[in-house]
Image (cartoon, rainbow, N blue to C red; front, side, top):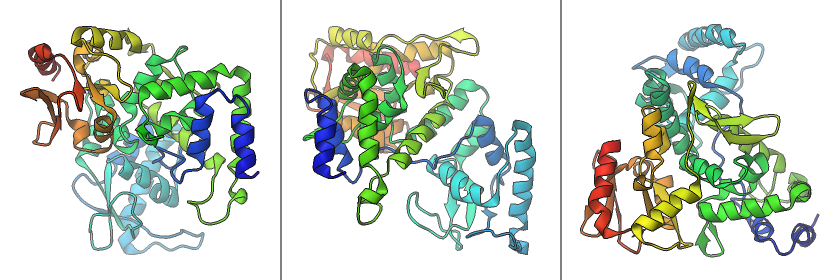
Length: 410
């Protein structure tokens, strides 16, 4: 299928829908896959904990390199890694799982490094940067990994897992919750996540895509009803590697793109507030945690409360940002307290993108003010300054109230 034919068939499904024009534009870009950081693999919390808990607590673990063939002979230096795999597999048997040497190194260690639960090193024990090709030789559990393994309860576990997934998924975990809460019915399908949500925060037609615009695209897509399947068929027919020349950057691969999205769903499913319906291929919100009901306010109600109290109008360039994200909650009551207009600020899309992508800014959960400008810091010295009107819109008379509420949450 040629590019011209692709455009004709895709837009022709309904020329009035902006979401189809967006999809055409997106698929022609090199970064068409959007957020995709984890290797495709099905695992659960117990699996992750087993892999992490058997790593040395304060030491490096040397592992094998390259492919392990049937006739491979392990060296004396690799004996500790063999012992590690033996312990891991013994525990994995209790959840009907197992793992090989190569899967551990090429998938599990890759994912755990990207989540910040482990660090990986070269032969000289020099730290290897995430996403860069390196000759990995050693692995070591990080403090974040230790915190996750030693979590005292489901909320502490959720916090550490939430930070890890936010780290690897470009800060979209809270945003996914917000988008879910703005949709009716409240679910996100694999196609909706793949086509729209994974491009949140990227540029389109000179503007950064906000959550509100993503919701509009999804609602348009749903308006096609049964014909939404035709959109998937047209895109999958075009996005075949054999239709393109050049390297991986030049090619399009619908199958891999979809696998990455399903991996994202499987990872979000690890969190206590999300549930992946594998039959319907939908991400939904759980109704309870440990038997206690949790119900978030509808997204539009929260917005109305914010706009009412702050006396500001909606701006397509701005979006609401949770100062303290839901995964920082220590119990059900704290979770409900986070779901409050006083824990929100209305900031420009560029600033929201900074909070999503900067690993220090993501932890900026303490609010203060310098004159009219708002300041968020991560409690260890890193600050983000939001210039009044340009970067943040709020009612100045509410400064003290917002700071007091933030202090209460912290």
